[in-house]
Length: 167
Image 1 (spheres, rainbow, N blue to C red):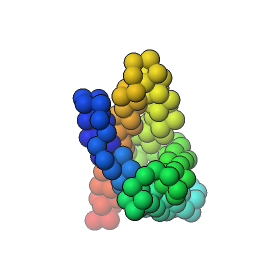
Image 2: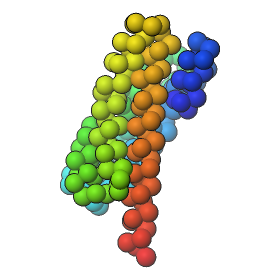
Image 3: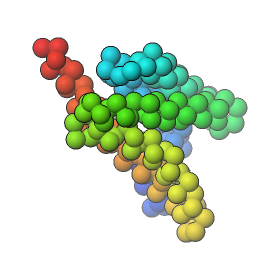
């Protein structure tokens, strides 16, 4: 959803309605699912699950608030912030163990990469926007999308490994 939104803005300068805000529910749910896959394989698994649930609930609350109000005032902003913060903390928390234990195969760098992209790509996009125009903020968001793709590939590897162990 963010990739579509970003490409449309870069191409036309117009933001498609709802795509940014409604993507937050899927980011939150994705982090909750990642926490579920990793909960028996990482230290601090209780904290990982709590952060996963916080991310899932906050992302859902942000999207629901935007859908109901049609604007980014009220609950949307704080819920989106909590979703992003819990996501980044969880990714940094599990990133070292995923890499050390080789849980994501050749995508072991995925959690750390995505966490750092959240931290760095948004300010970098803002700098590009300041230099070249507002639509270039989307470059940072596209970098975050690329990080999600790497994370998804790693999570698929981890889930496949879990299934292989169960059989």
